[in-house]
Length: 144
Image (cartoon, rainbow, N blue to C red; front, side, top):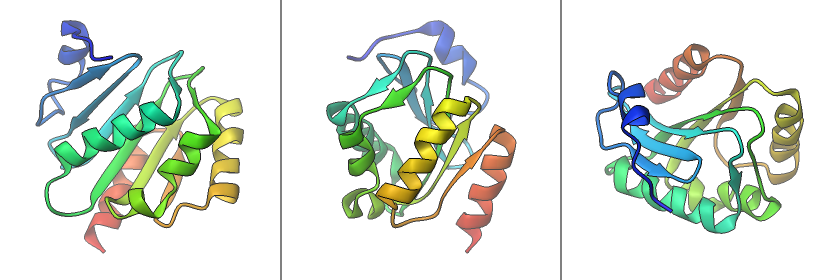
């Protein structure tokens, strides 16, 4: 479900180069550095239909090349097993060059470490404690 939020729009006005797409408990936009950012707020639950919608939004924003994805996750946000399988799929890897997750919650770090071990995305994927380190890593990947 798409929602409007002037407060959220203003939060990203200094880094967004595109429209900010507002959905239930998450926002997606293209940053001025050409990285696509997914901001998942507390209480976000990504089932398969949400994952498909997110990937379709990435397609709208990405341009012709594979995109770099920055996923910033608040505490108490999670996703279903089916969604984890989908986002690790070859189909999504054809669109995404690399993804960096900013995760501060220990429980979510454990879940996402399982994602790496079990789902094994076919692209560089790393977890970070800070947005700055995640963006720095994505820029290194972009230069390769």
